[in-house]
Image (cartoon, rainbow, N blue to C red):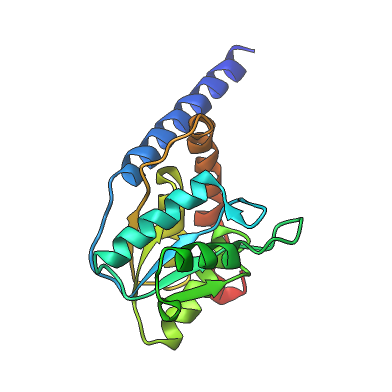
Length: 191
């Protein structure tokens, strides 16, 4: 019993330390000019971005208007009720008077891995090499890992200044996602 408690305690310490690291790294923007900005999707409600997703879109718009990248890739999946996160994200940016020509829509980005797959393919097709990932601070490290696993050589990051109570459990949960992405079979091997 004592050994089990030690193992559980060590596991809890590891999880807390890793979550703190993910939070600290992700909370610090790492920005340079890039070929594209990629905004990772989140929940939409009746054709409108959730507050979390709206904050991500505002951050991508801020970066685009500041000249950090000429293109914004909006990537999200099709929700259970049929709503297309990518199209909702596109519409929200168009409503803020961004030109249609600067928005690339990925409606197959149902998770971070699929977003990285699409983004890598788009960058290759456009002879581009760098991207700025935009998501919540605790998610940015996993975004960077996924994009690099798909061969994107330069990945910057920026997150909106948006916090919710669920962030308290999202950061530790993110550590598990990180472990999965670092051990997942290489995309080039069919992963």
